[in-house]
Amino acid sequence: MFELTLENAAAYLVERGVVAPGATVEVAELPGGVSATVVAASVADTGDAFVVKQALPQLRVRDEWLATPDRAETEVAAMGLCGAITPGVVPAIVDSDPAAHALVMELIPPTARNWQAEVGEGRVHAGTGRWAGATLGAWHLATSDKPVPSGFDDLEAFEQLRLRPFHETVIERRPELAAGIAPLLEELRTDRRCFVHGDYSLKNMLVGPAGNWVLDFEVAHKGNPVFDLGFFLSFVVLSAIRWEPLAPELVALADEFLSGYDGAAGAGFAGDRASMTSHTAALMLARTDGKSPAQFLDPPSRERAREAGIMLLRRPEEGLWQWR
Image (cartoon, rainbow, N blue to C red):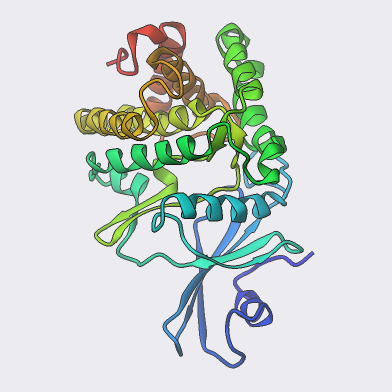
């Protein structure tokens, strides 16, 4: 199968008919996390700019972590669905190549910055939390108990990229937490209510003066909406643990997010606050003891995050910020 590299990206775009033969194409590798090869391509002749992304069958982590590469096709379908519900917050798809499990999308303007990176540099953008919550709530409500593209019925990518390496791995490595995590795992496998992004977090969002965007839809499926809320909030809480001086702003970000979500989907749509806290706790522990530890945590904050996650898991009724 074709394997995307910096060296062949320009020729691939010509072959796919995205770029004209003979055009001058500048390429650069983009951070694709652990699950994909991602290349930016700029066409000097026309000013067009694209992102080429190819799903990896073996993720770039220390442990063996395999995942079906046809999740790239799911990503294309999910971006089309969400782009129709909330125009302007999802990059436009330019080309899809199922044979190579690759896709080409528009490149977002360079003035937009990765939200997680912004937080790491002290810029929280707390007010943007309302946009993130409202966007997610709109997706969930619009697809609730309605038919979605058939590919979303397949949970294999969600199992491979989330439930097994996250929840099941934490249970395996910290069996004393199994009683708290196992019921949450069952909820995520059996409640199939609406479209779920599966990777909705600060690290997969761009914020800037020209607008805000959501990326990385390869774990999309029809499932339990509480997963998306817990996933987003886990990054907010972990960031507050890592950068303690930013905690008040991050608390405000979480409040804005939940207000935006409730306003779009309705209060209680994804369950009560205790359930949300439980799922956030499990996902925090996945980033300390699962197969994909949060890269921005240093050893001291990782230990504090583990302690906080356990506290939230055991006393979810006391809320997200009890550890403070």
